[in-house]
Amino acid sequence: MLEAAAFVSKFMLYGAALGGVGTGLHFALGIHANKRLFLPLGGFLAGATLLRFLVVHAQMGGGIAAAFSSDNLHWTWAGIGNQTIALLAGATLLAATRIQSRRVLAAAASFVIAVSFGLAGHSAGLEAPGVAPYVAMGHVLIAAFWFTSPATLWPRASHSNDEVIRRTRTFSRVAVFIVPAIFISGLWLLWRIGGGIDGVLSSLYGRLLLGKLALAMAILGLGALNMTVVTKELETAPASGRKALRATLRIDTVLFCGVLLLIASATTITGPTE
Image (cartoon, rainbow, N blue to C red; front, side):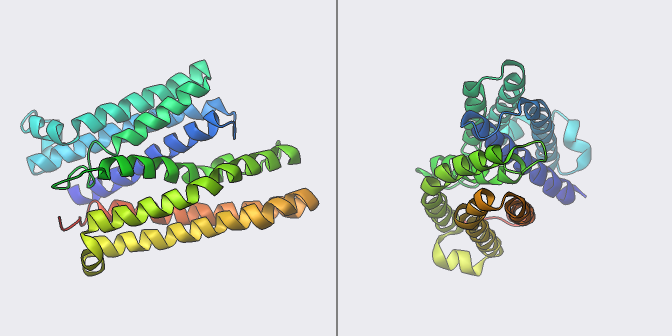
């Protein structure tokens, strides 16, 4: 039961964190202007963060009954205390963006949440982490930018065709520059944390992350399709263009859920050899 709780809490935390980072980045870049998203996102991230802390504390104590015990609290805090503070700070900044509607607040929330992934986890737990935590932070920022696209690029009936085209073009202009970065950083982290090529190919952890890489490549391929084909169709045949965009974004959503499942599995049921 505790292992199931760990998996669910990781899945929720990753989804909330990536959703918060991506939504903040898209707001800061002007891709969307829906500030109503930030309060529920901040609340969900705070709840997922606290749930994750309780589950880790229960694991430290050896059972669910230990979740609210003060025993071993110092060990739990030593492991994920700084990350918990950063995530809660990011959640607070998301909520503040709903009130103040400032792009700088949204950008700050995205940055703080991304930083939290370098304060704990496998990249920070390496014997000699070096730049791995910083690469992980950057990787999260870039991945979250893609992760949020099905929500912010969805062509709603209330959006004019000019607005839909503007959003997709703004997204594409940024995506062109970050695709190499997400690919290179992902491969490097896989190699570094997975223990080299032999470690990746011979471990369940490595194979799960290879599956994640395959799904990420499919997502990037759909992004290229949107940039080269769907956007042009939106200009020449708006109705069919919207239909095509919805279809690719639906597939993206399924693939992103698959990515979250694989990452949650890799960080709960197994782990890197080092």
